Image (tube, rainbow, N blue to C red; front, side, top):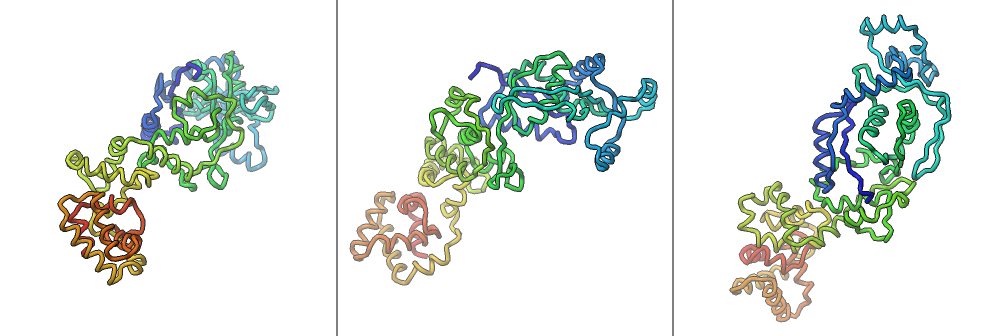
Length: 433
């Protein structure tokens, strides 16, 4: 809502933690959510010449120096109680540095931390101070010449004209390092905004042990992109008008950094299910059918070539289950007895409700249905009502046994809707079993 640009940048300089399929998942996930970008995607792994140029500036200003200490050397010193790097390589004479470089001994470049108080203003947390002497000379370039996160981000934020850096508050610790890099390069830093983390129900950082999955897995499970955007937006932010159901264009119009929470947010899957169910119920029936089509096909219940010919029937079925869906995928187990005649049966309910008496009533109803020329929801119900009136019984005395008989379950959509969807022959066959 600030009329800015969304620049998509992939921070993939750490080769061990960057694979092409992860990048593809990010791009596909954004597209699924309906979030486009104005520029990019820019991959940091392809911007090495730019980082090298800025490294040369730091070298000319004597703000960085080569360090030949191995990770094992550093680890041994830390285990011995030396937690900050002791600058031993900074003290090497020039000829020794040249000898080691010429001998192809691997080295990194470390930034020479100034002994000063580093102060920056976070737009959520206010003024933050950090003493430079509490931060070791951090690595800016690895032995393979790739930049580290802090260095690459500073260069890219400047090159791309980034005005606001909005990220998780666990990155507050990185900000003082980036501030001194900006100063060393003679660059004005952007504004910093550190937003809450997303936690699991136990209020610990969301991870795989909480069942955290990739964005596209939520798509496969049947969540709608508009529901996912709505849910994620409310993790750490509150709209001014107080509603929980907020469309993307409303979020854009109403968004303000002032209403971002300082406390961490909890990822509540039950709330996501509720919100997703709300969005499903508000879809047009034709739209919902299009969205569940792939689930029918993937489950083997429907062939792609059958969709058009069965569209009217599928539409009636989807409409019947629509109020009960929390995820699109729910329709597969819910409608199993619609597609399969060997559906599982609730044995406890069957033993309790299917008796000789109810079995006889159901066979009588089947005979009445056999005589019907038009088999639809209304006629199924009126014929049923006539029968229970003749029998002098309450509707529930027969409705519950019939439901178990023709669906194997004790609950579901309206019974006569289910009959109409099953059709005359299948309904009669199940009543007579």
